Length: 379
Ligand SMILES: Cc1cc2nc3c(=O)[nH]c(=O)nc-3n(C[C@H](O)[C@H](O)[C@H](O)COP(=O)(O)OP(=O)(O)OC[C@H]3O[C@@H](n4cnc5c(N)ncnc54)[C@H](O)[C@@H]3O)c2cc1C
Image 1 (cartoon, protein in one colour):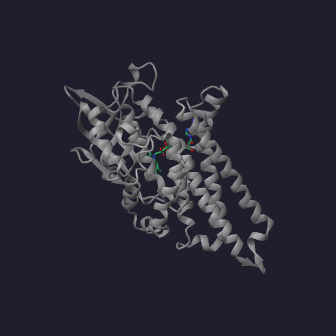
Image 2: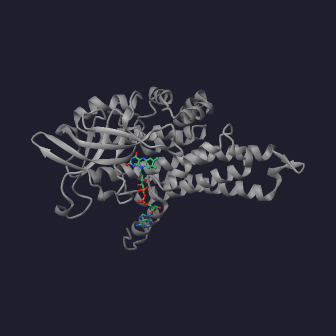
Image 3: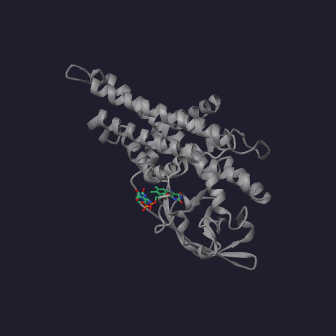
């Protein structure tokens, strides 16, 4: 595992921090980083060896993404997540031809991929999505509007989540959803980009699907069982996201500690004041705690057990740890942090997202209350 992290760190160091600062400013996608990671096999940590992967589970992905994020990219490391998790989904439940045709370019870093689940109206209540897919002989016709889909316009494909059985006809709301592989350039697909605060290396789009015709062989796994596959993905995604946030937190902790040692005010380094020391030490504690929770969750997930409580807990704690790190760094750098050339504000903008997406703190606590503590479902 350590070697994976070292390899990822070397790639991050070769690219340099300025690479991410300039992509953030120019709102450009980190293709060079993706190709370097893919070239070194680091996008295939969750793919079995027989399909060309490293087969190191979510533990391997977490070790890779933590060290990559900590070496400067911060949440720019997201590109490791999307390809790795979707590759593992295809490896697990994709058809033979989906694996043969799509996996190679996802894991070698020549393509990116994305998930279209969220819709503006459904928000956190993902099961209430209204995008539908209707079967017409050997094709499906998709209609609806997805929102907040990252990089959809330049993806090899979008995994579109659509309802194939009406909600009135299923016993549980989680039934009747299907995953479709959708070419972003098909007739009827339109991408409308949003302007946004952070994560500017990645576009985030509204995706309009207007009677988009998709062949039946583009269904992933079985029809109507999409939510089951997504749940499998979500737990891995939460664990690896937690690892990425821990990495970002470590990066900021290093920056803030270094600055506190060297910035002299009132004739002494600001880091010699207890108020500053405690602030940094609190972030350190919270980051270590989140890290331990992350790797415990990874162990449980890789052992094939349900990791919903551990993955959700690790994710939400890591999001808080990273946010505290970002806030502490801003306070410690003060005026400097407000300026563009110091690499604090980029992280502060990027990290804020993870306190509400892909999962909000409120919903994470509700999941923990329900699954971990046996309290009635509140959402
Ligand atoms: C930059 C960005 C990238 C994204 N990328 C993707 C992507 O690639 N693919 C994708 O599918 N989605 C993506 N999303 C969407 C993201 O997953 C949603 O924003 C998220 O699910 C929350 O939905 P919402 O923002 O509509 O919040 P809402 O559901 O409207 O919630 C608003 C607030 O109310 C709270 N709340 C809601 N219900 C309850 C409850 N029952 N109890 C307590 N509190 C509650 C929430 O916690 C939150 O604080 C992205 C979003 C952003 C901003």
